[in-house]
Length: 353
Image (cartoon, rainbow, N blue to C red; front, side):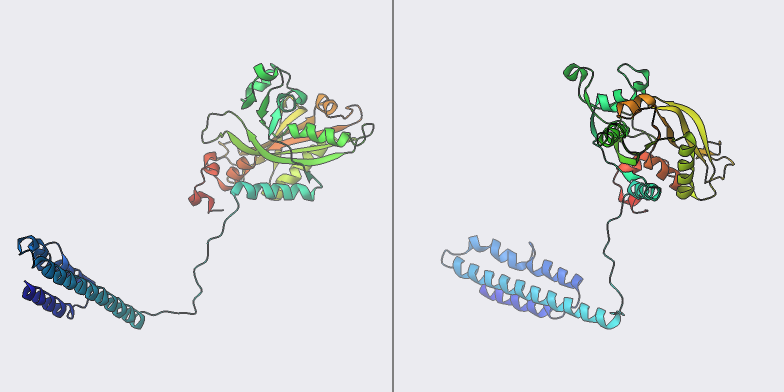
């Protein structure tokens, strides 16, 4: 049996020296170290040997196995080095080429639009005012001329945190619009000088939440930019001039705008602002649904009740307010047909901006 082991070792090592590639080396491993190899058959026959012969033959078989495994590893490394040298000598490598760029994070497309809107209004003298996302019913509805059981509340299905059973007519909810910030801002400004409060010119960006049926046009969360200007002798023409200038800066100097009568409980009179479709030039297409116009925001003169609730005397002060959705503007500018793309966290979509 010892002679057989010496013969197996000699034959295996001799054939190993002739191997030049990985495929042949794998075949060699199967032949001499595999389950059905001659060496493994020696191990299976140990039980048939005399008791005193078993440790001698077993030790010799293990030594042969270890020798072949070490020779296999050494040959693998030799073949790898040979392949590497061949690759280096035959393949062209320009070490002066720059490396691959490290991927950098990008701003969300809605954030880009939001920053552009903020920059435009900052040039007009508007300051950014931030307000909370969790509101009371009083600030979200009542002080904005939405009394309890007002039919206009049905337009905004809400996420209530504390129900009416817990807090009566003033439950806590996630704000459905950024308009509650108007009351917070007016009360903060008017508290500085209640008899003669200062003028206000602010925008209020932030996230809003509504209990919507999610579709290509509606989401349960969305961003909004509220605008508010209060002072003496502010007229509807000031509102039109401000928003028309915004549209030209946002969509191009040649864009046309129009205002259509509408209704919002916290403004009177109220309007919706459209811009001429920048895809078809007003001739009509699928995006503007053949009308040639695209709605981008709602606006109006601040309702006297809202002014009074904010600490401003409606006999002395007037103001205008507007609200727009950065998602909608982004969808219009880039012809995006599904609002759900903005919150799906799909890098294939986000990396396009």
